[in-house]
Amino acid sequence: MRVSTYKDLIGQGIKGVWRNRMMSFASFCIMLVSLLLVGLTFLLALNLNRAIDSMEEKNEIVVIINDGVSQEQIDELGQSIQSLANISGCEFFSRDQAWQDMVADMTEEEKDLFQYADDNPLPDTYRVTVVDIETMGNTTVQISALENVESVKSPNEYADVLISIRNILTLVSTAIIAALVVVCLIIISNTTRASVFSRRKEINIMRYVGATNRFIRIPFFVEGMLIGVLAGVCSLFLTKFVYVGLYDILTNNMNILTALGISSLYSYDSIVKYVATAYIVAGAVIGAIGTTISTSKYCKV
Amino acid sequence: MIEFKDVSVTYSSTGVDALNDINLTINDGDFVFIVGESGAGKSTLIKLLQKEIDATSGKIMVNGFDLTSMKRRKIPNLRRTIGVVFQDYRLIPTMTVYENIAFVMRCVDAPKKYIKTRVPYVIGLVGLSDKADCLPEELSGGEQQRVALARALVNDPKLIIADEPTANVDPALTYGIFELLKGINACGTTVLVVTHDLSNVVHFGGRIIRLEKGSITIDQVFGGAEE
Ligand SMILES: Nc1ncnc2c1ncn2[C@@H]1O[C@H](COP(=O)(O)OP(=O)(O)OP(=O)(O)O)[C@@H](O)[C@H]1O
Ligand SMILES: [Mg+2]
Image (cartoon, rainbow over all chains, first blue to last red; front, top):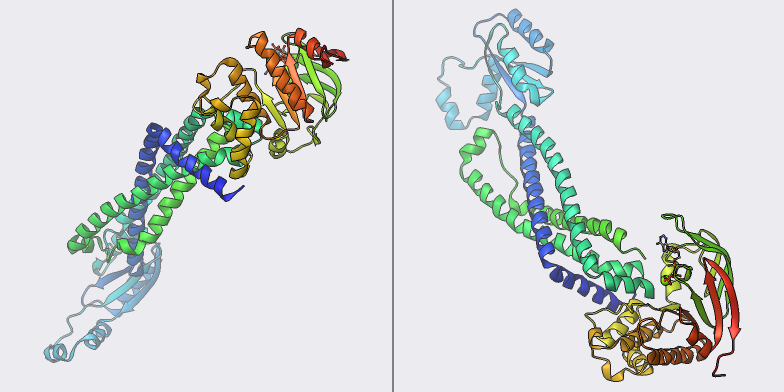
């Protein structure tokens, strides 16, 4: 087909959105809400994952051993720890070693200050790493119940909470995404079907005079995809609004983040490219598939 | 050229045998009347030519296309060789006479320049030059029919099919329409007219095929009063 023909067909598609404006607007709104829901859920999951990842890097439980226990008892404790489930490593860290490490990290001034300390105030510890951070809370409880353990410090008590949030989120969002995609496909295909219906006389003539499938369908594709892409673009702006708002609240109140053990969130600028692409591609693809459903049924040559 | 070999059509939804063992050859440049009572199978025959339906059995060739074996996506190519005047005209009510005709040229991707010269030409051919900017509802039945005819021939088809072209117009106009069809036929286009109206058939002459309950009972050339 000629380039000018393509232009005409695209123009017809754009006109179709307007001619069919009530339906177009309805499906635009539904797509907008759906894309927004999916997008925000996804961004939430993305940031949760980042938090969990950063926790997994320091998935070390520090087991503080009671003062004045014998080396034998210490070894015994080490063996009991290793016999627990979910343990990937258990390393003894003597108080002397800890002291040396600490001194090595000190500035000259601090060294001056501490050289008069008559005694090493640090305890003997075991540094325990776990296989699965999800059950770290459980493991911590088990260790603290062992003999000669003074206390157990796990880096993040919220890890398992965050992880269960993520797991639920993954489950729920998969279900929601599936449902929303179906809803979007139905609404788009209904919209283009209404458009096909309003032009059925023309389509009937087109078929008889030998218009190709492509010629007949392109305007409807343009229509469906345009609605999808517009919904994608608007979702992008709304997402920016919501995300930047939340980001500012959370990062300005460092307490919330540190309480949750999250070091940092993705900044909007760092992800905007991907978010934009995802929204627009999702809008266009859903528009195209929805149109295929309706046109393959109603405008066969 | 149209060739039917042992063609039968049974509508699966109702089990009606619309056509039984039709054997038929129509040469290029023929002027053919198909007559028959309601339900005889005339429209079924036309639908077969356009490959709107497929024969239950038998072999059909139309303008060099083998309809039994051709791919679906080639159907537009077949239809571009056929112009149809529908009984109810099927003009698009929101388009003017000019636009209705230009529309079908755009459908087959004709160049814009060609459309600009060709459309006025065919409008002139059917004698509607002064009505080119009218909407269909502003035209009489006979005028609408001539628009439909202009639209059927604008893409220069090899075959023109007219379904009941005289059904909705008064006898005086009928005459004019047949004159037009004769003129088109004289330029080499095959014309196939479906009609109840035997009086015109006899007056104009041509080949007459009579369908009865899905079978051909008469296939014969009449001289016509004119010649
Ligand atoms: N789509 C269809 N499904 C089932 N049966 C059909 C269908 N179309 C036509 N028929 C049947 O096939 C037979 C032939 O129909 P057809 O339309 O070819 O008749 P016709 O000669 O064109 O009649 P008319 O002069 O009334 O238009 C009829 O008995 C009709 O009921
Ligand atoms: Mg009929």
